[in-house]
Image (cartoon, rainbow, N blue to C red; front, side, top):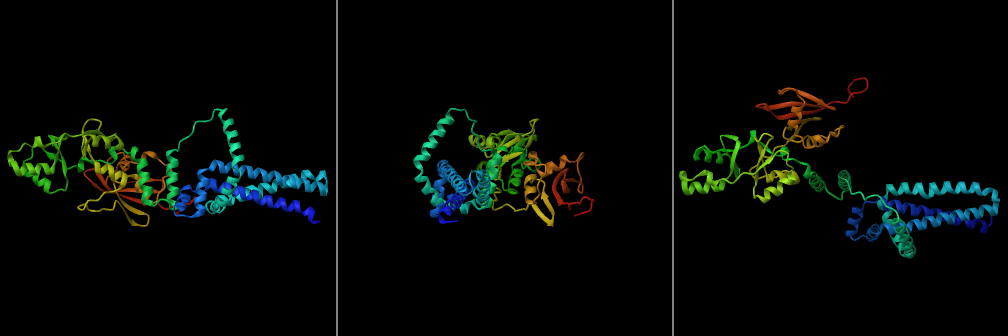
Length: 427
């Protein structure tokens, strides 16, 4: 074979490599993390700056790649056809076309795209300078084809644009956290903000059994004694029973009035009007209501108008940013690992938080359990009031009542059961 007959084959192989490069560049820029490229561009990396520009003009980039890909495919096919015809005649064209198609599919499309998807960031950065040059070189032709495409698109009615769903946002946050673009605390904060509107007052309130309140009929000495034993700045005041809250007393106001007037003061005149809200109210709705009424405490009522508990602005903010500890607070672990796979958990902890901290994946993915408290969930599993030692099982978890007080669950023991083989023996 002389040099003249080899040249078309050499050019065809070079074109095949070009097709592989274009396919890899297209997949790499379609798959790469935009946030990571932006982060590297902000650090001053030249290739990342070019890659970010390409991502910002991605439609132009795709059009340029399509022009180049089709050009090299057509050119390669034409060269191979001419070379085969000259050497073996027209009878071999069909076979050469089949071989060329298979070679272009595997070597020029499938293989480079598979590699580019796996190493998208590395390949995108390496391809960015050349691709930007090609985008500038083919800008007139790209602009013409883009205008034709947009004109044709206007003639048809397209589907409505889909906004990003909440599940896609959670997946995006999880991916960015795993990639290191967001640290874990930032990811948790954004996730909490997304869940903020779904949380009801009922899941974050201080229940009436834990409520510290003042009886309007108590003597001032009794009220002072109660104030000294606690660290609250405000307390609800009731008349007759806790279901009849008549106001909110600011401790500082009470002490000032007591020092100035003593027993002559009228406690009712010191009370702020209470804010009542229903247990089903969402906390994102409650926060502006409390701000508008300039209230730090809201009294939560049940379906019968009775007092279910109270909720404070701090309770709402803690749902967003996590636990806020005062200097006088005693830090308590809500989930304590007793041994491998065995945990002691607070009944006031949410089921979803316990599942997350114990690395348990709920196979049912029950959305109703997201904001359900452990104690509430446990009560739903029994037909009667449970006693310490009573337990139930849930998809490989055994939950046992560990501590109770006045028919109220305080602590639960959560144990991961060993997996069983098909024969029923422990794995």
